[in-house]
Each structure stands twice: as C-alpha cells, then as structure tokens.
Image (cartoon, rainbow, N blue to C red):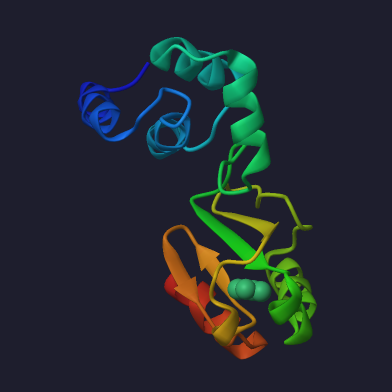
Length: 154
Ligand code: FES
C-alpha cells in the first residue's frame, strides 16, 4: 500500500497526465521510491490503483531498466554499457567493480550494501564511461576513481 504521502502525490500527478495509462510511469516511480523495487504484487497494486490493466503496468515496468524488478542494495551501481561508454572502457569498469565487491554483474553483496547493474545510455555520453549510484552520476571513470567512490559510501 502506498503511504498517505504517496497517495497525495499520486492525486496531484493525476491532474497533470491526460490518461491513466500515461500515469503508469510516475506511479511506478513512486512505488520504487517507497518499496525500493517493483514486485508483481506492486504492479498489481498500481494497476488497481490507477485503473489500468495489469499487463500494461507489467509491460512498462519490464521495458524500462530504471525500474528494479528485484531487490537492490543500499547503493545501486548502474554502469552504462552503451556505445560511448563501451568505447571508453565500461567493460573494465564493470570488471573492476565486480572484483572489488566480490560479486558478479546483476547481483548484490551479501551485506545488502551494493548491487551492480548494467544499464542503457544514461545520457552522460560526454562523460563516458559513466555510472549512476542511486540518484548521483559519476563520469570519466577509472579504476582509481571507482576505489575512491566506494570508500565514500558507508
Ligand atoms: S553511452 Fe554511456 S552515457 Fe551514453
């Protein structure tokens, strides 16, 4: 169930979107902010809440990589592997992160602190290779920069 605050936010959002189908994206985002990830039960809840078919919510949630379909760690490290980042060494960045955190791509450390994911273009191609950790962007990455960034995350 949405919190009272999110129910109020959803009511405000309804005024800005022409259809309930269009409301699916921000409703899913609110859900992810509240629950941390979007399970099929949450998708059903959203579908009922905004009165759209479950398969519409499911298709939207599964299309966009920004929606987590399984639990993620406290710090969700999303490394871009699209063409600019790939050309600038994103594969090495992923390998370094995986080695440093002792997990494989797509997984979470046993303490629940870090998850490493591969994502599509973050719109930061000029700063390739780039990654996003939660809501923060990091650009022009090197293994040394990664080490410093990880040290700052508690
Ligand atoms: S290709 Fe990586 S941010 Fe665009």
